[in-house]
Image (cartoon, rainbow, N blue to C red; front, side, top):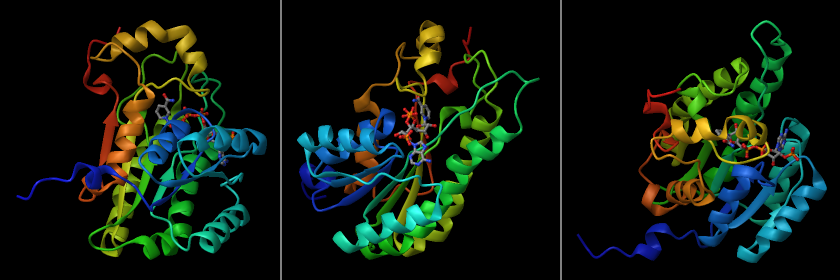
Length: 267
Ligand SMILES: NC(=O)c1ccc[n+]([C@@H]2O[C@H](COP(=O)([O-])OP(=O)(O)OC[C@H]3O[C@@H](n4cnc5c(N)ncnc54)[C@H](OP(=O)(O)O)[C@@H]3O)[C@@H](O)[C@H]2O)c1
């Protein structure tokens, strides 16, 4: 085997990426990682000012642009596609990260929660991937496939025990993202587009603020590594899957949870 060029293996120079929900939390962490690896990164979120501010902050690491949009909306998706098509003519990396949750007791759990959560977490992941496929194909080749990375959850792999409330629509939606990933892999692999899902454990974010406040100690204990996720944990995996190093990973769901889902010591 020839000597490995580690820079070539992991760098994302000349790649164009879109991170949905990149204005905060896990999306922001991954956007920063991709930027530092050399990619140009578009971030999208509904709140224009926050999205613009985040892109401004992220610009210290590379070329980052804010494209505010509600990605549940087909017209907004078309506008995103037009903009990236016009400026870059291709998309190398699509990260379907934007997601939402709903927690309540079993008795009170609103059936409407399923409409809201499954729409963004599953239907929109499908719509974004399908609608961006022509632009991903423009970037794709046998040697350098384009990438679709969807953010599932460890809660799609096990039943969460620490929330104190039921998250029925959320857990079902994340299990669906994982299976959708495998289904899309069958469709898109032959087109030289890899499709994978990341299943994070607990990372500090707006979505998990309340849970950390009440269950922080238990969350740490449930991880076999005794801690929560750090930005570099999720950024590193996003870089790996997006780079040459991850080019042969396809149709998988990769947990990044410190061993939480295999830990049966839940208290
Ligand atoms: N944090 C964790 O511990 C954890 C664990 C497992 C999985 N996850 C998954 O990781 C992903 C990110 O979670 P997070 O914790 O970082 O959540 P977060 O802090 O709530 O961030 C969600 C992001 O998505 C954007 N967003 C929400 N609805 C949108 C829409 N309709 N169109 C466009 N953007 C939208 C939000 O911005 P706007 O509100 O301005 O639109 C924000 O940028 C989610 O899929 C979540 O399920 C998180």
